[in-house]
Length: 109
Image (cartoon, rainbow, N blue to C red; front, side, top):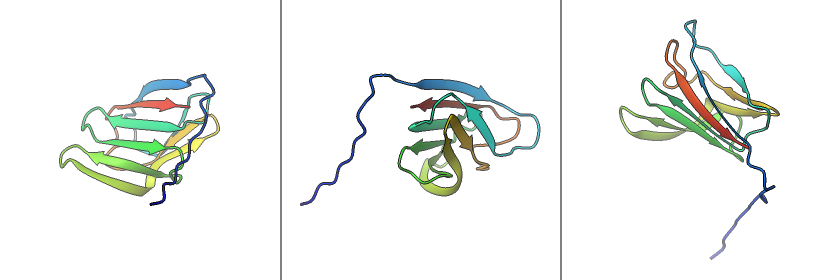
């Protein structure tokens, strides 16, 4: 049996940012500035409880999406989360990023 493992050493400093986002305009892709490049991001729609998670090593604009109403878990390869040098982009996934519905997010670097 072959076991493949990778690990990034901990720098001893935990970078964490949390926030909320709501728009009353048309839902659109948007950027969050948190001051660091995240290694993990979770975004939850507080209204529907649908959520997306992105982990370091996943492709840009992808996410693991959980749809609360059906308990469906899927890997999306577009309209998800993209890390940036000082934050991340939340794509226009129409289950999570909905106009006039509050998003809550957390990012770790």
